[in-house]
Image 1 (tube, rainbow over the protein chains, first blue to last red):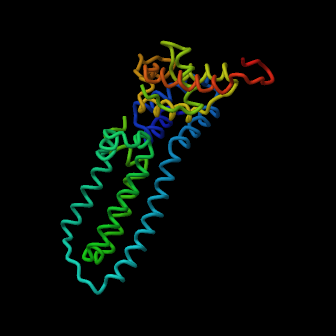
Image 2 (tube, rainbow over the protein chains, first blue to last red):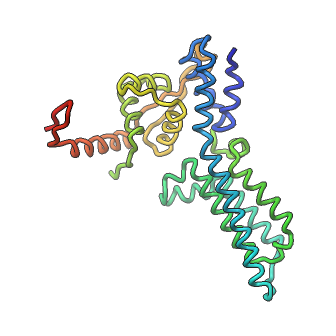
Image 3 (cartoon, rainbow over the protein chains, first blue to last red):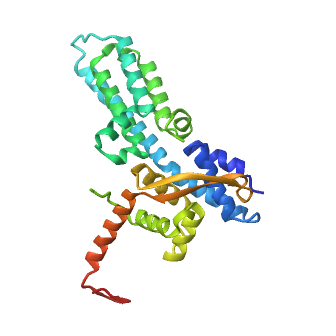
Length: 179
Length: 110
Protein backbone atom coordinates (compact mmCIF):
# COMPACT_ATOMS: atom_id res chain seq x y z
CA UNK A 1 0.00 0.00 0.00
CA UNK A 2 1.36 3.38 -0.91
CA UNK A 3 1.40 6.14 1.63
CA UNK A 4 1.13 9.47 -0.14
CA UNK A 5 1.50 11.43 3.09
CA UNK A 6 4.83 9.79 3.88
CA UNK A 7 6.06 10.51 0.35
CA UNK A 8 4.90 14.11 0.67
CA UNK A 9 6.66 14.51 4.01
CA UNK A 10 9.93 13.14 2.59
CA UNK A 11 9.86 15.42 -0.46
CA UNK A 12 8.75 18.38 1.68
CA UNK A 13 12.05 18.11 3.57
CA UNK A 14 13.80 19.09 0.35
CA UNK A 15 11.59 21.63 -1.36
CA UNK A 16 8.86 22.74 1.01
CA UNK A 17 5.35 21.50 1.66
CA UNK A 18 3.38 23.20 -1.10
CA UNK A 19 5.66 22.06 -3.92
CA UNK A 20 5.87 18.57 -2.43
CA UNK A 21 2.07 18.35 -2.38
CA UNK A 22 1.95 19.27 -6.07
CA UNK A 23 4.55 16.64 -6.98
CA UNK A 24 2.83 13.89 -4.98
CA UNK A 25 -0.48 14.93 -6.52
CA UNK A 26 1.07 14.50 -9.97
CA UNK A 27 2.38 11.06 -9.01
CA UNK A 28 -1.00 9.98 -7.65
CA UNK A 29 -2.60 11.09 -10.89
CA UNK A 30 0.03 9.30 -12.98
CA UNK A 31 0.03 5.96 -11.22
CA UNK A 32 -2.97 3.80 -10.43
CA UNK A 33 -3.75 2.32 -7.02
CA UNK A 34 -1.92 -0.92 -7.87
CA UNK A 35 1.26 0.71 -9.12
CA UNK A 36 2.86 1.05 -5.70
CA UNK A 37 6.33 0.11 -6.88
CA UNK A 38 6.30 2.63 -9.73
CA UNK A 39 5.02 5.30 -7.33
CA UNK A 40 7.81 4.77 -4.81
CA UNK A 41 10.40 4.41 -7.56
CA UNK A 42 9.41 7.85 -8.83
CA UNK A 43 9.50 9.28 -5.30
CA UNK A 44 13.02 7.86 -4.87
CA UNK A 45 14.17 9.29 -8.19
CA UNK A 46 12.72 12.70 -7.31
CA UNK A 47 14.40 12.70 -3.90
CA UNK A 48 17.75 11.73 -5.45
CA UNK A 49 17.38 14.37 -8.13
CA UNK A 50 16.52 17.08 -5.60
CA UNK A 51 19.12 16.18 -3.00
CA UNK A 52 22.33 15.39 -4.87
CA UNK A 53 23.39 19.03 -4.93
CA UNK A 54 22.90 19.24 -1.18
CA UNK A 55 25.09 16.16 -0.75
CA UNK A 56 27.78 17.68 -2.99
CA UNK A 57 27.51 20.96 -1.06
CA UNK A 58 27.87 19.12 2.23
CA UNK A 59 30.96 17.24 1.05
CA UNK A 60 32.48 20.40 -0.45
CA UNK A 61 31.86 22.31 2.78
CA UNK A 62 33.47 19.60 4.89
CA UNK A 63 36.49 19.21 2.61
CA UNK A 64 37.09 22.93 2.26
CA UNK A 65 36.57 23.33 6.02
CA UNK A 66 39.22 20.72 6.67
CA UNK A 67 41.56 22.40 4.16
CA UNK A 68 41.08 25.83 5.72
CA UNK A 69 41.55 24.42 9.19
CA UNK A 70 44.90 22.95 8.13
CA UNK A 71 45.82 26.22 6.43
CA UNK A 72 44.97 28.24 9.50
CA UNK A 73 46.99 25.83 11.63
CA UNK A 74 50.07 26.48 9.47
CA UNK A 75 49.36 30.22 9.47
CA UNK A 76 49.10 30.20 13.25
CA UNK A 77 52.48 28.53 13.57
CA UNK A 78 54.06 30.88 11.05
CA UNK A 79 52.76 33.90 12.94
CA UNK A 80 53.18 32.53 16.46
CA UNK A 81 55.91 35.07 17.21
CA UNK A 82 53.55 37.96 16.55
CA UNK A 83 50.96 38.83 19.09
CA UNK A 84 47.77 39.71 17.22
CA UNK A 85 45.07 41.59 19.00
CA UNK A 86 41.72 39.90 18.83
CA UNK A 87 38.30 40.16 20.27
CA UNK A 88 36.34 36.95 20.58
CA UNK A 89 33.01 38.66 20.90
CA UNK A 90 33.61 40.76 17.80
CA UNK A 91 34.79 37.71 15.86
CA UNK A 92 31.84 35.72 17.03
CA UNK A 93 29.48 38.48 16.03
CA UNK A 94 31.09 38.73 12.58
CA UNK A 95 30.75 35.00 12.04
CA UNK A 96 27.18 35.09 13.27
CA UNK A 97 26.25 37.94 10.91
CA UNK A 98 27.92 36.33 7.89
CA UNK A 99 26.24 33.05 8.74
CA UNK A 100 22.87 34.72 9.14
CA UNK A 101 23.23 36.65 5.90
CA UNK A 102 24.12 33.52 3.98
CA UNK A 103 21.51 31.30 5.53
CA UNK A 104 18.64 33.72 5.07
CA UNK A 105 19.59 34.50 1.52
CA UNK A 106 20.57 38.18 1.81
CA UNK A 107 23.88 37.63 0.03
CA UNK A 108 22.00 35.77 -2.69
CA UNK A 109 19.69 38.77 -3.11
CA UNK A 110 22.64 41.16 -3.40
CA UNK A 111 24.17 38.92 -6.06
CA UNK A 112 20.83 38.78 -7.84
CA UNK A 113 20.36 42.53 -7.73
CA UNK A 114 23.73 43.03 -9.39
CA UNK A 115 23.00 40.26 -11.87
CA UNK A 116 26.49 38.84 -11.32
CA UNK A 117 25.48 35.25 -11.78
CA UNK A 118 21.81 34.35 -12.11
CA UNK A 119 22.72 30.71 -11.62
CA UNK A 120 23.54 31.42 -7.98
CA UNK A 121 19.82 31.83 -7.43
CA UNK A 122 19.38 28.07 -7.73
CA UNK A 123 20.67 25.35 -5.47
CA UNK A 124 24.27 26.30 -6.12
CA UNK A 125 23.73 29.26 -3.83
CA UNK A 126 24.26 26.90 -0.93
CA UNK A 127 27.57 25.61 -2.31
CA UNK A 128 28.83 29.12 -3.00
CA UNK A 129 27.45 30.33 0.33
CA UNK A 130 29.18 27.57 2.27
CA UNK A 131 32.50 28.22 0.53
CA UNK A 132 32.17 31.98 1.02
CA UNK A 133 31.51 31.48 4.69
CA UNK A 134 34.50 29.19 5.02
CA UNK A 135 36.74 31.77 3.37
CA UNK A 136 35.47 34.42 5.81
CA UNK A 137 36.05 32.02 8.67
CA UNK A 138 39.58 31.24 7.47
CA UNK A 139 40.35 34.93 7.29
CA UNK A 140 39.10 35.44 10.83
CA UNK A 141 41.14 32.53 12.13
CA UNK A 142 44.27 33.86 10.47
CA UNK A 143 43.75 37.22 12.17
CA UNK A 144 42.44 36.33 15.58
CA UNK A 145 44.64 33.98 17.48
CA UNK A 146 42.38 34.26 20.46
CA UNK A 147 39.63 32.64 18.44
CA UNK A 148 41.96 29.82 17.62
CA UNK A 149 42.47 29.08 21.30
CA UNK A 150 38.81 28.18 21.44
CA UNK A 151 39.57 25.40 18.97
CA UNK A 152 36.92 23.03 20.23
CA UNK A 153 34.20 25.66 20.12
CA UNK A 154 35.28 26.81 16.69
CA UNK A 155 35.24 23.30 15.30
CA UNK A 156 31.86 22.59 16.86
CA UNK A 157 30.39 25.85 15.59
CA UNK A 158 31.88 25.36 12.12
CA UNK A 159 30.53 21.82 11.88
CA UNK A 160 27.10 22.94 13.08
CA UNK A 161 27.15 25.66 10.46
CA UNK A 162 28.11 23.21 7.70
CA UNK A 163 25.10 21.14 8.68
CA UNK A 164 22.83 24.16 8.74
CA UNK A 165 24.08 25.44 5.40
CA UNK A 166 24.07 22.19 3.53
CA UNK A 167 21.66 19.83 5.17
CA UNK A 168 18.47 19.85 3.15
CA UNK A 169 16.24 19.15 6.13
CA UNK A 170 17.43 22.06 8.23
CA UNK A 171 17.97 24.30 5.22
CA UNK A 172 14.43 23.89 3.96
CA UNK A 173 12.91 24.60 7.34
CA UNK A 174 15.03 27.59 8.15
CA UNK A 175 15.18 29.36 4.81
CA UNK A 176 12.07 31.53 4.48
CA UNK A 177 12.56 31.67 0.70
CA UNK A 178 11.93 27.94 0.40
CA UNK A 179 8.27 27.58 -0.48
CA UNK B 1 16.24 42.11 -25.52
CA UNK B 2 19.14 39.96 -24.37
CA UNK B 3 17.91 36.37 -24.33
CA UNK B 4 18.73 33.73 -21.75
CA UNK B 5 20.76 30.77 -23.05
CA UNK B 6 18.78 27.53 -22.77
CA UNK B 7 19.77 23.92 -22.39
CA UNK B 8 18.24 21.24 -24.60
CA UNK B 9 15.88 19.94 -21.93
CA UNK B 10 14.81 23.46 -21.03
CA UNK B 11 13.86 24.05 -24.67
CA UNK B 12 11.90 20.81 -24.76
CA UNK B 13 9.99 21.71 -21.59
CA UNK B 14 9.25 25.24 -22.81
CA UNK B 15 7.98 23.96 -26.14
CA UNK B 16 5.79 21.37 -24.39
CA UNK B 17 4.28 24.09 -22.18
CA UNK B 18 3.62 26.26 -25.23
CA UNK B 19 1.93 23.36 -27.00
CA UNK B 20 -0.29 22.59 -24.00
CA UNK B 21 -1.44 26.16 -23.46
CA UNK B 22 -3.65 26.55 -20.38
CA UNK B 23 -3.49 22.88 -19.41
CA UNK B 24 0.26 22.63 -18.77
CA UNK B 25 1.08 21.01 -15.45
CA UNK B 26 3.48 18.28 -14.33
CA UNK B 27 1.59 15.26 -15.65
CA UNK B 28 0.57 16.74 -19.00
CA UNK B 29 4.00 18.28 -19.63
CA UNK B 30 5.66 14.92 -19.00
CA UNK B 31 3.14 13.16 -21.24
CA UNK B 32 3.54 15.72 -24.04
CA UNK B 33 7.33 15.36 -23.97
CA UNK B 34 7.03 11.56 -24.08
CA UNK B 35 4.60 11.69 -27.03
CA UNK B 36 6.58 14.24 -29.05
CA UNK B 37 10.14 13.07 -28.37
CA UNK B 38 9.68 9.39 -27.53
CA UNK B 39 11.62 9.97 -24.30
CA UNK B 40 10.08 9.68 -20.87
CA UNK B 41 11.68 12.46 -18.81
CA UNK B 42 12.71 11.66 -15.25
CA UNK B 43 10.18 13.24 -12.90
CA UNK B 44 12.89 14.77 -10.71
CA UNK B 45 14.60 16.34 -13.71
CA UNK B 46 11.33 17.85 -14.88
CA UNK B 47 10.49 19.48 -11.54
CA UNK B 48 13.99 20.84 -10.96
CA UNK B 49 14.01 22.23 -14.51
CA UNK B 50 10.61 23.87 -14.01
CA UNK B 51 11.77 25.41 -10.72
CA UNK B 52 14.98 26.68 -12.28
CA UNK B 53 13.14 28.19 -15.23
CA UNK B 54 10.68 29.88 -12.91
CA UNK B 55 13.56 31.41 -10.99
CA UNK B 56 15.03 32.64 -14.27
CA UNK B 57 11.69 34.19 -15.15
CA UNK B 58 11.14 31.96 -18.17
CA UNK B 59 7.89 30.46 -16.87
CA UNK B 60 5.23 31.44 -14.38
CA UNK B 61 3.19 29.09 -12.25
CA UNK B 62 -0.02 29.16 -10.30
CA UNK B 63 -1.94 26.64 -8.25
CA UNK B 64 -5.22 25.20 -9.51
CA UNK B 65 -8.03 23.71 -7.46
CA UNK B 66 -7.49 20.53 -5.44
CA UNK B 67 -8.98 17.39 -7.00
CA UNK B 68 -10.03 14.08 -5.37
CA UNK B 69 -8.05 12.14 -7.98
CA UNK B 70 -4.90 13.73 -6.56
CA UNK B 71 -5.83 13.11 -2.93
CA UNK B 72 -7.02 16.69 -2.51
CA UNK B 73 -3.79 18.17 -3.82
CA UNK B 74 -3.70 21.09 -6.23
CA UNK B 75 -2.17 21.13 -9.70
CA UNK B 76 0.60 23.59 -10.44
CA UNK B 77 0.00 25.09 -13.85
CA UNK B 78 2.77 26.65 -15.93
CA UNK B 79 2.82 29.35 -18.55
CA UNK B 80 5.73 30.57 -20.67
CA UNK B 81 6.56 34.22 -20.04
CA UNK B 82 7.53 36.69 -22.73
CA UNK B 83 11.17 36.26 -21.70
CA UNK B 84 10.81 32.48 -22.04
CA UNK B 85 9.22 32.82 -25.46
CA UNK B 86 12.04 35.05 -26.69
CA UNK B 87 14.65 32.66 -25.32
CA UNK B 88 13.16 29.56 -26.93
CA UNK B 89 12.67 31.36 -30.25
CA UNK B 90 16.30 32.50 -30.25
CA UNK B 91 17.50 28.99 -29.42
CA UNK B 92 15.42 27.51 -32.23
CA UNK B 93 16.70 30.12 -34.70
CA UNK B 94 20.25 29.06 -33.82
CA UNK B 95 19.38 25.45 -34.61
CA UNK B 96 17.78 26.48 -37.89
CA UNK B 97 20.87 28.44 -38.90
CA UNK B 98 23.07 25.45 -38.18
CA UNK B 99 20.80 23.14 -40.16
CA UNK B 100 20.49 25.46 -43.16
CA UNK B 101 22.05 23.95 -46.27
CA UNK B 102 22.74 20.58 -44.69
CA UNK B 103 21.60 17.38 -46.34
CA UNK B 104 20.95 14.98 -43.51
CA UNK B 105 19.56 11.46 -43.78
CA UNK B 106 15.86 11.55 -42.98
CA UNK B 107 15.08 15.00 -44.31
CA UNK B 108 16.24 17.91 -46.44
CA UNK B 109 17.16 21.15 -44.74
CA UNK B 110 17.34 23.81 -47.40
